[in-house]
Image (cartoon, rainbow over all chains, first blue to last red; front, side, top):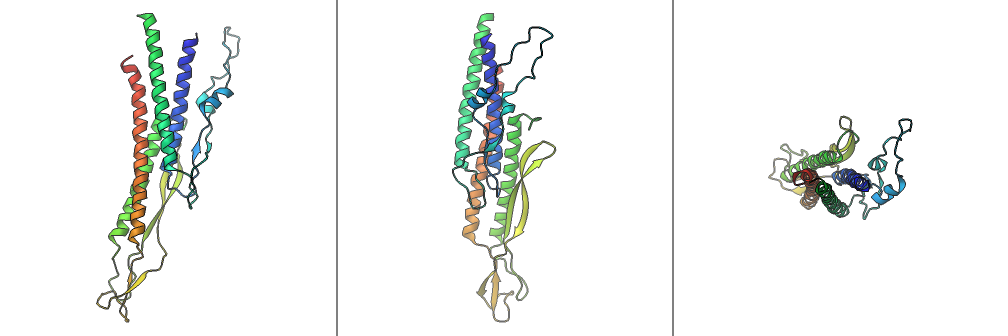
Length: 126
Length: 141
């Protein structure tokens, strides 16, 4: 059922967003740590392209691959930064704040979409 | 990071950032308060400016990268010398060693600590906000 898959996709994106939020919290907390390099994870679309939809197990003899976690596939790496200070710190607070706003918008969109889907499913029940 | 929910984790990390920046503000206020503190005996050294450095440390209990105060050191810049024969810290020639605190530098540092503290607060606020949004999914469905 495609609707169910959409909800799953939405929750995967929420997981990706929260993982990114944790990474940005780390960047901002280290905004004045000498030698710290700003990190980021790859875009959601990129992670989505890498994962394939698992086949359904319709027989007990089928081997089910371990449930792939999209968010777990995200690996933090050094990100492009707007500035590097003399102490070797590459965190730009402005840039991180932009990412924060980005996450906030995407997360709001995400929860609103989930709510609409949920209402849609409920309208079939009530 | 696997054990803790990422939003909870970002709250904790932002908290460690707040703690580090407030420690920095403490050191700055110490420096400003002591900007005129000379020694008490003749030729004695005055207050030496303190410096603070941070480090990113993996918290073993939580498995999270946190910021910690690495060390509070002493600025090795030479002391300024002023002619003030009446001062109890004046040497035989009447010169007094003054602290190596530059108010302008301290104020600029304070501003920077302030900005970083605000950024950390913003992260904490947003993490709480995102959690709220998730909870609200259940509220009016």
